[in-house]
Image 1 (cartoon, rainbow, N blue to C red):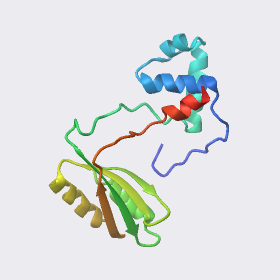
Image 2 (image 1 turned 90 degrees about the vertical axis):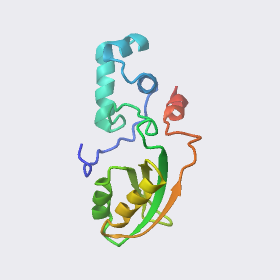
Image 3 (image 1 turned 60 degrees about the vertical axis):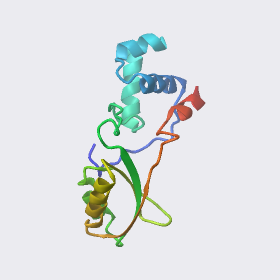
Image 4 (image 1 turned 90 degrees about the horizontal axis):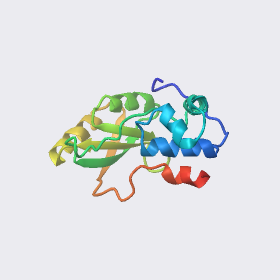
Length: 164
């Protein structure tokens, strides 16, 4: 899927088997379809059909490995709120995507226009990343905050457990 492509999301809620399958893959993303079917007590074809449907609906977006960015040398995580020129969101987003240390960008309401999560190797490296962001055409103002810790990491387990 390309960055500009959007999937049509269904209002169809996940059922118990969907939730159990996703919890299993959340805990052990390297499991194969056959092992998932064995652990869930359903046919291999059922698991494959469920995975295909979840992928098609955009619920399941892939199977990337979980990475510890600090262990990769990016010990500093920071967030930035960007104010951008009217009508420049697409261009600014593309400019930000070209900066390797930018991990995610969200269009937001409220104080700023874009919310950015970025990583850096040090405070000096963070200054370099910020300078690159400010140089993106259309960025008018930027305010950053450094994350000191992550008491609640990104998660989906509670949402899936609510179904089971």
